[in-house]
Length: 549
Image 1: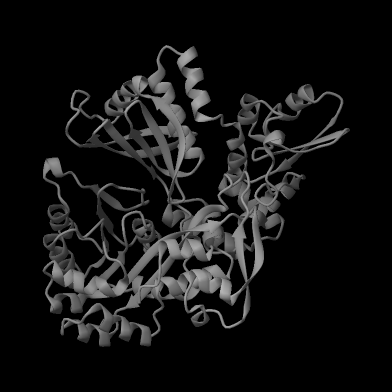
Image 2 (image 1 turned 135 degrees about the vertical axis):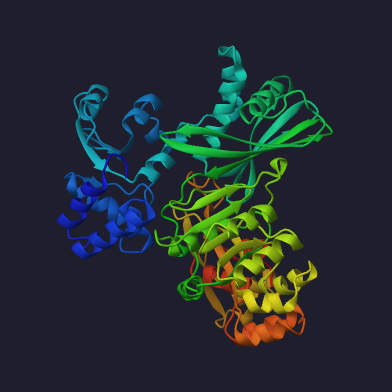
């Protein structure tokens, strides 16, 4: 939380009897082991949720808690205060009356805050409330101008267009929680799109005559060749925003109308990540947690590109990341920093490939190894041998579902007896967009309506009429009805029966038949539970993970 130390938060929570002294002791131990905040412990363990934490801090400062997530401010509310003042003091107008104006902030101890507001709203009583930092940041999105208007202003008022325009684009992407920025070159213009919650959204257009300067700025900052226009190039760059390091991976490819750029925005630190935060249900969490306690073996997370595989692996590593365990990773790229772990970046130009790096890692006395991706037979064989020789190995692999993973690994050349001896768990996953909390509405759907988008719906819905949910669209979700994403998973616990099957080169269907009998559920079935619980929609589930078993 902004402006508050762990000791202050401990005092606040104890004074309000939100936690016990035993909870604080556990949180401090966790914080020390994981080099994180005690807040991360309380949130990830489910002892507190975000709103209860906000209420506790508000009580400590003797003010009300303003829940901006449930009651998001309108654009007109936010814009009553200038952008400069709002961002300087981290405040949002929450409620305005003839005699009283209520503002909310995530840093109420700031010197001069109330005096500044009294100058702006003369003659009215100023009341301060407290809100969570994330909700304050979301409210600030109302200060964003249309991309095309901003570019026009920059062109008219600034001599050096490229760095200012690039900063505008990147800052906007971060504010919108975008994972990727696309610069799509056309004949006369460049279309800028953000990938938000897994879906591309057009944000604006840059005149082609100005694009070359932006492109050169990207190349310089990511140490790529600015005079090379007909060869694909990959690089990376970093920038600092509000004390946080933002890492970006750059990909440039030549196209018919010029060089297309895609920037992947990587989160530098993920300290509060947990399996529950990702959307994994308690029963599946238990299976994953038990497998991660094994002293050796192999755990694979599979799915297409962009399905959150690496994020899940980091969440599992968080469960076992203690000072007495030596965790070493080899990745391309390093997406998050893991406190206490040794992380190695693949560098193909220098000869540091996955397979060569993995050979070196095994000689570094690791307990746990994370291989960013198994791409070929060489890496697969070294990974399996590492798991055979007393290491717990995590990796990702491209496979459509959990049961096809085993035949695919054998297709790339892994011997069945090696796979049978090492493979412990397969997690297949996808990401679905979550219904926006602010505009979610329930509605009654008859079975015949569901049948139109889901044939044989009676396999999943026993009643003739069921309650489903959807987002109506609002300013919080840019009128999409969706905000954020959640995981749906399909897990195969590789039991002794399945290990014996692997020796006989089984088909994916045969593997799934046994796994299903032993309690596994499909991606689609996990998604159906999230549809019933109001987390996502049937349309979104079918878009992402249609029935495959």
